[in-house]
Length: 157
Image (cartoon, rainbow, N blue to C red; front, side, top):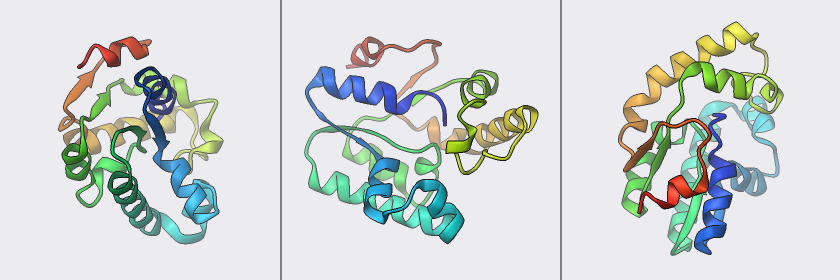
């Protein structure tokens, strides 16, 4: 969350002349609700099931593309295995301090952090990183660099 997946993903897809999918946007389009509304109305379990279904659908129906997935996507069901089986995966690795500074002004759009203070946000992010790191580290490529550019992603090939 907040590492720039969607922004970099769009730029990468454009450079590679590929389609781009933002998994959260696709879920919103399919369900007719924002991610916030889905969480509030149906809860995280429902959201994670839809996330898994739509991820599989995009992979099944598209040959070559770039996709940005939510921070929790690799951690549920066998999504990371599905992602890795369908192509290359990249973990944009940032520490909790950097992510907090990037997210502090965009909290209202993020259902899991929208009501947290800055200190609570940093603790939340650190806890999520600790909890999710084992999944993230399974990525084919790990980029740990401030101010990532699309060229950094292209050089991975």
